[in-house]
Picture 1: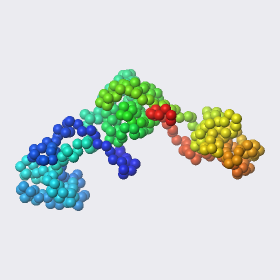
Picture 2: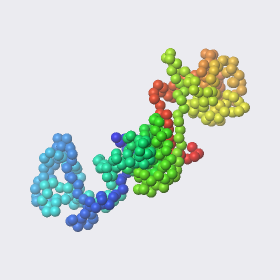
Picture 3: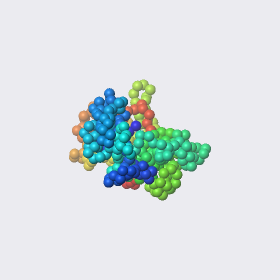
Length: 362
């Protein structure tokens, strides 16, 4: 299934092969050079496309060619243009019962539009992908449903160019990431299963080291590059069993503060001298996560320490009602309420996120 984000996207052409070029010839010595003929009939029927039904006259025999079942591929205006440009081919002796359209090599030399059907000769097959898997992981631990590297290469050739970002949210054995890496694309792979460790990491390390399986030889791959490997932290909120969410006991105070800063768009940077400055956003906005209860007195004390035009967001498990709107320079929020505004809980999350290390400064 193929989707485009906007009408501005158009697929790339495939590189022209010697075999495809050999299909062009010039039996009538056309000055425009080698050509091949294409069917002039549509897949649609007469009833489906009545606007593409009209009589065509064979200029050699004078016969009138009518639509019988299928419509023509082109409307009347385009058909007349084909006549004016001498693009219709009526066979060697001019007695064909239907015309064919002459397609010139000089007009398509930059590449080929792919067919809807990809044979195993050009896109690989399951036996090929199984052998690739065995070469990478051994006969005792191959991946059960690998894709051929040539198949993924063909897809990425059509849809991307060097430097583009490729996402595979079900990475499997790492084929997409491996091929994207070899083709000079950036990539992100997400995988839930244990084979993120047993297959993806070893495979991508082998790619970096210059392994020569799959498409390596055809693209001239010699190794290089790198990637970063991430594991998602445990779920921050979990069910209490009584219909509401509570903070997970897997989080200590530091982890909780980091999570709050991340969720609210603050940079986590604790100030060693001011305990309530755990992160910042801009020059005058700070964040503080309190794992316990906040009282009005506690709030007043912090408010008095804020400088002119400084503001603080306090994330707390609980606080007195009097704390709401108590201080002009402090905003108080419940931690679970904050998170629920950003996330959907109770759904499965992917455990792992693997991405190309294309910039060590990121």
